[in-house]
Image (cartoon, rainbow, N blue to C red; front, side, top):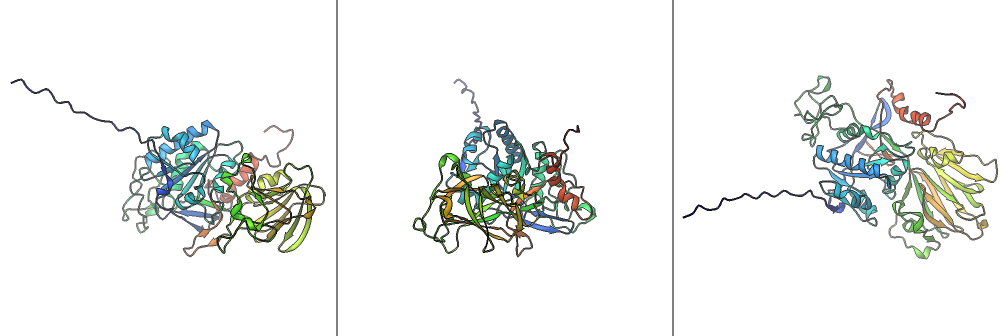
Length: 459
């Protein structure tokens, strides 16, 4: 009897999982707390457990930034457990075949509902426009996830980190508030970040409570007393009202969908909108709200009211209402003042006013401003823009009501409201933290805006 033929063991190799999955299936959003510190006016970021759902937003139409986004996604997914990487739909379709793991997204029409419920942390790779795009995804929400920004755009005044620092920047934001007692952030991934609660901590203390969830993370953290610094950037609350005084915010398109070629919705009649709830839908702007004359050859005529008092009839190309963050954007180009982002204020800046005596104003944050289209506008609609995106066209008698969004202290002792931005603290602050607070802002004025730069001198 001949021997049986040799048996060959067949081994199969699984192909990378290059899938696009719905973000709606992800776990619910994890909300961190922002804690005050006696040594700085910035806040400290504290995660209750490791963040899981990470939205990556690279600059659009920039192939080199997409390459960096893929590199970043591969790094954090391979070194940090249980992360879910989320992209906008058009970006996900572009990068998913370059990644050996599934990515998540949502349809553009569902982003406004899905992302605010799912996103723990936003990472932007681009310029200031990319940060505005990220904030616009949450323009209807009172709470915005922390934004970790990498400057890869043309200006990047709001971008805090260079992309070359992404490993350090990510780890600092991810581990913030973890109380993991390992001292050095910069270095190879050779240590285990999580230690038992009985282990020694920085400074010799063994009583610090170590939060759970970080025990499987390789590498080093910053030490138990080091947390990411957060600047809560004030926003504007915006309400669009028809000539009958009815809030019609629900007709105003989200900024993430507001592109010039889509046209502007006409917002004329109260009959077009019925209130779906007793509380009007909120709109928020991190930079500015503007009404301008658009393509019309005639100047816009806008009545301005401050705290229910008539201020002036503005005859100009337009009017800007800005935050301190927006004071270095369109408002600055129109001749407005530069205001530090920690100052609780808002600005009224005319755009090419007919009267030379119409000067920019800086008002308290809680000021209520109403912009009402005058009957002298000859029946034309004027476009309303929020953070540079055209949102609606408003007609005679309609109003745009604006006030600053306050920061509210929560029952847990943290803060809510505004746009929480992870700040690249220098660590050079004095005992009162003043230099640390101002380092990136002052540096941005000098290096990017060339503040008071001398003419004719070589530096």
